[in-house]
Length: 258
Image (cartoon, rainbow, N blue to C red; front, side, top):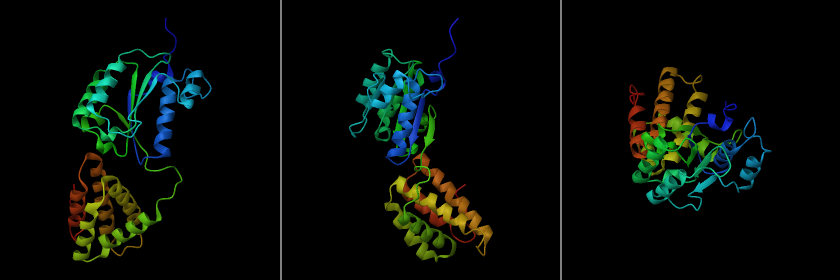
């Protein structure tokens, strides 16, 4: 009889770790990678040989792809796929940490999809991206997603808060032309920037909900902005979102994105 199932084998075979590049995303990836190679009872234990090597960045079964900041192309994914069929050196799992997964084009992602679907059972994949929306729906469906908006307790950018306050005010009480001009300017933002703004705008709308003279409209606008924010996770462009934001905020039509 075999012993108890190793804790590392109970982790998902693939995770998408999404959020702004920085300490939070790296820390989440570090901890997951360490958990896969840990040989202790409650991974990551932090004291076994596997954990110590992972912490030092020298574990032979943690393979980093795209660490140089270059785009991860189809050739890199094919090389990864070939390597994945080589057994781990010493750990129960072999971990591929794809640092710039959002840079993969459709061909590279489709090559990655084959590995996610049919890869060896000991292989694990960590796909780091600013947004899980940068990845194809078929890839996302084969992974669990960990979204890291920002470090716990970290205050949002004051400039972003002020911008979201302006947007919330325009949506609630601004004139039609003023709203339209502002929303047109939002097309210049990238998807991550617009997502952050919409997240904060939802917060501003919620904060002012009780004080609003038209709570029904304020609540409908909050749901409208939330729906548009969710759409950004599915590769919808900022230009479309900006247009829907303006159109759906017109009096009498505050929530027509559904």
